[in-house]
Amino acid sequence: MSGVRKRNLPQGTFTAEVTSLDHEGRGVARLDGRVTFIADALPGETVEFKYLSQRRDQAEGQVTAVLVASPDRVTPPCEHFGLCGGCALQHLAPAKQIEWKQHELMQTLQRIGKVTPREVAPALTAPTLGYRRRARVGVKFVEKKGGTLVGFRERGCSFLATLNSCKVLDPRVGEKLTVIARMIDTLSVRALIPQIEMAASHHVVLVLRVLQPPTEQDRATLAAFSAEHGFEILLQPGGLNTIEPLEEVLTDGSRRPGERWPLHYSPDGSDAKLAFEPADFIQVNGPLSEAMVRQSIEWLDPQPGDSVLELFAGLGNFTVPLAKTGAAVTAVEGDKGLVARGDANCKANGVGTVQWHVADLFKPDSQAPYLQAKFDLALIDPPRAGAIEIMPLLIAKKPKRILYVSCHPATLARDAALLVEGGYVLTKAGAMDMFPHTSHVESMALFERKSGGGGRGTGDRA
Image 1 (tube, one colour):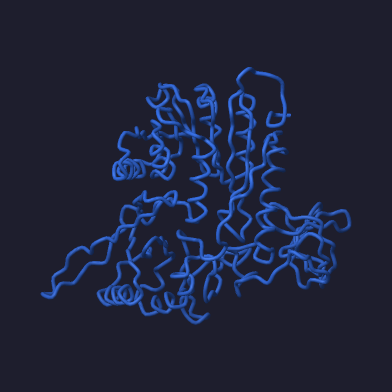
Image 2 (cartoon, one colour):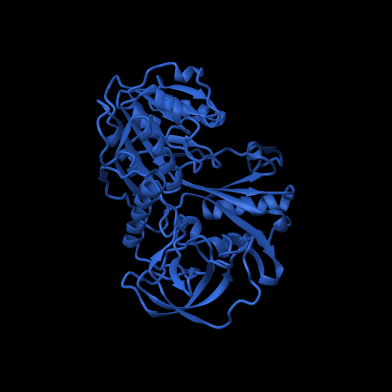
């Protein structure tokens, strides 16, 4: 990190009173006129800590002892908390985690967007353990550590942590990290497998990135492991388009490509089913995602015959539920593969009238076919970068309501300011705990177009 002084750091431990949490979930204290961010410290606590880095105006530290504990402090559910960099807030009670995230969302909307919602919606929550159905875990053969490591990186560095289990992964995988690691130990290509993509629905898929083709014995080992543990194992020798199942060996010794096990999930808890590929983007937290989709339909309130523009549509997570209301949906997504699967998902669920378009929403074209119609409503679900490029064109379409699903409060706040300047009011917003025990803040916001262009109020830009 540029400007960080790691030489001549103050040695020993120091005492600090913690006043708040920063956006990464670290405790904030002030010592000698300098802001100090202390990992694993909570507001209201008095802690001992050691310095990790120091600059002129700020420093970073790590708790070594809690002298006065917050009533919100809990025992982390994972034995690896503090070593593994996957979670930052397991020491804070889950109810307080989402309370903090709600506060972070409102503060960011005001600080960056200069806007406050007219209504603060209750935060969406779901089970806080075993929730991750999609993840990429690192793999590294380290002889000095006894063999293969499977899991996430250590906090603050690039080394893989030595993990026995992971409490936030689907337990079918999270409780078998050591079993998977020991199996990889037996492969001739164990040093040439850098990562595993995990996807879980009614069964679990493990996609092994292989930098060298596995031997016949390796393939036999993988097939036996698949049969024993119920995992579907796929190999990825190159890009995403190279993902392939293990070959099946027939009784006469010949081979044929293995059959794929279909993956699917319900977007809203109904009987609707969306098929997806192991490397496709889907929301990692199934129960929370279902609640999110149901709330989005409730807030947007599409009626039969309404025209809805959906941007960043993916493979149909919102599209199918929107279309099932009787609304006419125009779905736009930049990835051709996702558009193909989204279209197939709509047809498989009996909503084949959805119009799908492939378009780069970060380089929008005002003459694009999807922008030539009039829309009553809009739903957007952009990545962390937000949707600033499409905002002027979206505002120009003048939909009466815009539902914005966000995975980054700062870009939501920036885009909210543009919407308010463009004639919209932020009527309600609330956080969603998509990633419990982490500092990630996901949220939903509803914007409604002003009818008469009256004076400003709550929900308008200050």
